[in-house]
Image (cartoon, rainbow, N blue to C red; front, side):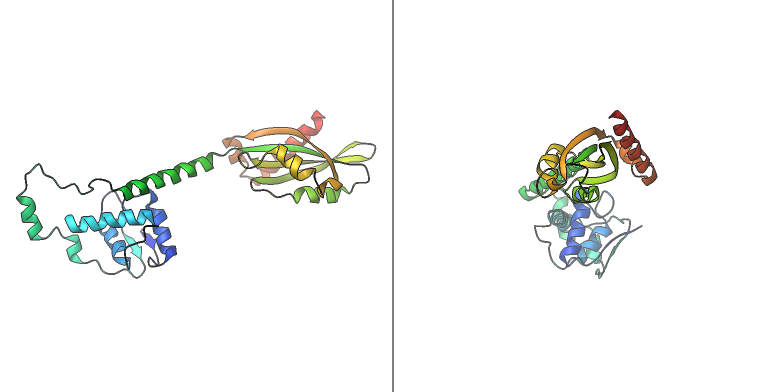
Length: 260
């Protein structure tokens, strides 16, 4: 299926092309082809240096057109409003350049890529940093926590208590299943599951700075961690199935209750 680009004269179109070229040297394949010429011809003007990947690719195609032309067939590309590819762009260099190159020593081969410029080195470093940062983000671990939330007494409205707890929202925090567990003397506690992204949420901070301060402390007397487990990759995959997820959560809640 041919790759497609639209509105290359707009910021949105250039952004898509820039993201596409982050890990690629050419539009298709491993050498310059007619696909590169199609996209090159569709650009109304040289791209801004802000689009580092597009600028790198554009300057390289420009150099090839000046030096040797482009003859690769490519796999096919769709560009909205693209101009026809001029035949001279696909051909080999002009006769004068050919004669000049023939007069040179056989050992003096033309280096199509040449030495990296400072801009190209900077662009490569930025791409590597972006890939590295993206990889780190994906590696961030998650944990499953089972927590007891205790009220002040038997007169505490447990429905409002749970609403207050679930009202705490943080990036990397997801509230799960819950139930009320009898403690004694008519008092019940809220037992609730939560999933956290380890790099974003600290359970201690969540309890001390969000769950036991005003206005929630009107209902919540204290919070205790019953179980804290790292979620391995296998368990993450299993949690993709809602029925299995609910079953596992219920088992963890029952396990925590029985341990009491």
